[in-house]
Image (cartoon, rainbow, N blue to C red; front, side, top):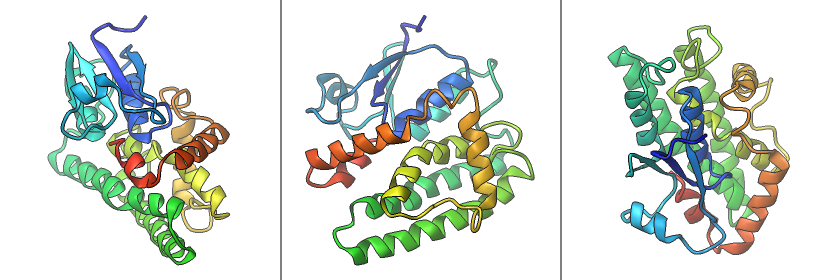
Length: 237
């Protein structure tokens, strides 16, 4: 039974909403899932609870709204401290590095994925593909540094960067299929391939990540509905 004091406003296809749900699953926190239809006008609840950015996800705890997925992750980690290992490292330097790489995912890697999906010209898509491929190689190196030879960016357990990047795995596969390129491959990023398998199979994750075919179909509907899909994708932060 869901905790009436804990709610997640979002849509099943948003990687940023998936982050919140994965964190709650890791902490064994039950919640009410409030679906926001991205193909319809923004709901009154969304506009009221996030009047500045008007984006999902919005996390409600004790009726207080919290916005922005990475901020929500940190909030969850600070509130539910005894139910599971910490999402962020306890060491200040390691914590700063986790925040840095999560920001890299949002500020550099994800926008390149978006441009690869909706590039106006083949030249635009070619440039975006090069940036995405370069990004996966960069993240492969970051994994080597942060994981310290363990299964996850967070070491033995799923951590902040795992959730930030792992929430994109479905869209990475969808976009890779559309451009007929394997974006995460054994040839260039073997450690990320192994990490993605471990992450996707985790009990806290596997019921949150959507079916790729369903996600691809949603992407087509979304593109047909809007003129500029980056704005729609970006509203999920």
